[in-house]
Image (cartoon, rainbow, N blue to C red; front, side, top):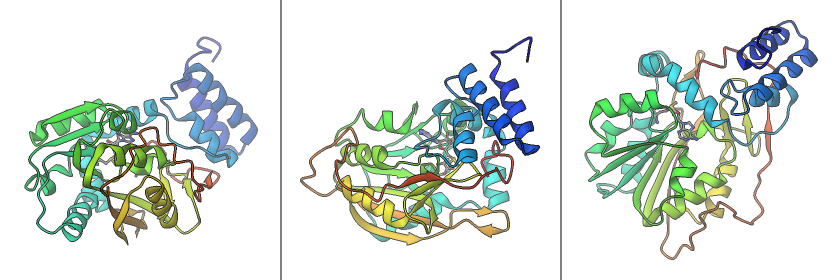
Length: 297
Ligand SMILES: C[S@@+](CC[C@H](N)C(=O)[O-])C[C@H]1O[C@@H](n2cnc3c(N)ncnc32)[C@H](O)[C@@H]1O
């Protein structure tokens, strides 16, 4: 620490050691030093502070998500599909078929596309498929599938805000779990959809109101919160059902599969300022990570 006082990983390792020893004050101070050394917060010191201190946090740092999945990309599919029984893309494909039987789409966008697992079950009904993700390593694997017409490295909300009435399908499979406050993403998705366009996604669910950052470093969202934010964005519900996209430990992680539509006549609201009363009680839960939070499991 003396030789490299500005090296965030050293502060972060110290914080984790202090946390493991039960020194919460020392851990918080070291997490703060890690954040000061790396304001982009690639290690996720701010959300770890939020979890430890029970403080609110609206989203995970982009640099943290990118680094997390860059390190995970090589074993992502084996771990998630084989190890955790992941079925997010299949749930989304089934939800689209239920909401719009047989419908084909001219231009689709896959938010947080990762390695492109959602491309195969959807591609047959799409004229054009685009993807966006924060992780270059995940995008490189998606590229290898040769099922995407365009792939962009960007934050999903920043990317969505580039479009008005451009897509007739937007999907997000297990990607909104890295966003707490869904209002910016939903408002931008509503604006980016053509009238009649669909937005289908999975989230992990919680029974308490609002949303919450778990010690797993993934957010859970209440059904009523999802429905209220979607309504505030002007989206019409087609389907919101309980469905688990993956296991967590031995049990299925509670989740939701949802499909919403942009109605005709929606007044676009690209900034995500809904100006309405939402049950938006964002908060963090838990006190210590139950597992290594750098494993997105
Ligand atoms: C669990 S993976 C799911 C990948 C893919 N959708 C699938 O079903 O296999 C989550 C992905 O979302 C991406 N992601 C998380 N937050 C994001 C954000 N704000 N903007 C863009 N991508 C994001 C991550 O980089 C990661 O590739």
